[in-house]
Length: 435
Image 1 (cartoon, one colour):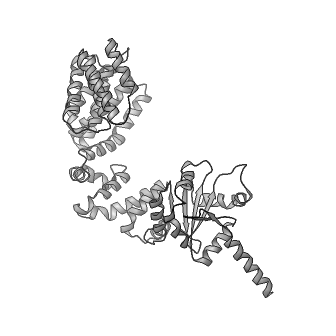
Image 2 (image 1 turned 90 degrees about the vertical axis):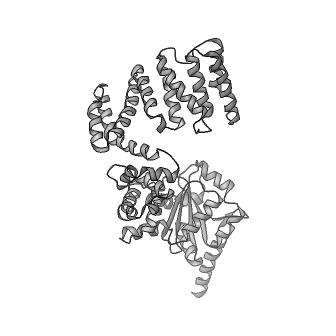
Image 3 (image 1 turned 135 degrees about the vertical axis):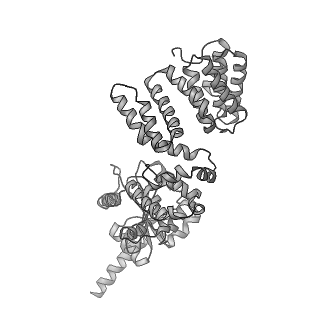
């Protein structure tokens, strides 16, 4: 009996020793063992288990195999982790070892909601799930992932179990909500975030609340006007905009929620009623009572632009775009001004509207802070407005400039700009024939 036991144990030891493969450097993946045997090995060696859940068609998975796992700086992870690749799909080419994992792979996928690839599941030496992550990781990311997986203060499943059991650690709840969101559990993420915001974050002083990290968190998890984060954007937007250095960000955020709750339902109902125009007066009154007339007017005019554009009413569409530019251009960035000006160029026959758009685009390309990746497109818009107003010489010169700016920005010679230039030289309209 003792001899048999010794031989049995020796057989397992040999199996475990001979089951490692991978690059000479970097991560060593174990193969040839079942899930049960992997857990036995982890327990005996007191190592974490790192499951790389992949699919044969997954591009990022293949890139990690090629560019990441063989990196020398990852070799030290083998001292703390047993790495295992688990194929989550099946194919006719699957070898015997892969087929042996079919049932376990299916069970793991269902239990831990593996729906993205690659997904990384990390288990303690006792076989308990402690952490998870998804998506392509470069070498620093993978090192950070493994570091978090061994840190009780960063282990997602450990923190989640503590939270579910009623042990709330507010200092870790932002991280917990963000991780749940990243893993695709949106409802859980929102519930944790709301709990954290409502019972901890909003009670901090302004200096502690309004950090770049907290503002990003509030933006992600403020979904309605009932959320307490909404009032922070509504009442203290200037502080938020100053911290993140984005003028008018809070206005845009608040306007989006107001429109989503008060305007979109009415517009949708109007479309379903046979394109019956919404009652703008009533909508303006309702929003004014809740949020003030200035905010109501801004949201209604943006809604009208969307409505008339979708309805194909080009006269009212460009008229409203022009009114929007005249009243609110100081609150827009260069990209939004360009969008409105381009719409006016495409569809307006009104000289005053075209001149308004031209003047705003002149400000954009002349003196306003601009998005360097958009300057060529904005110059193209300016050139086309000049051309439609009959200023062909200036238009051709500006179109040449737009082409050169595109090349300087690494875009090459844009085909649409070249086509516009040729049309300008030939006196052919660069706007739609029917407008």
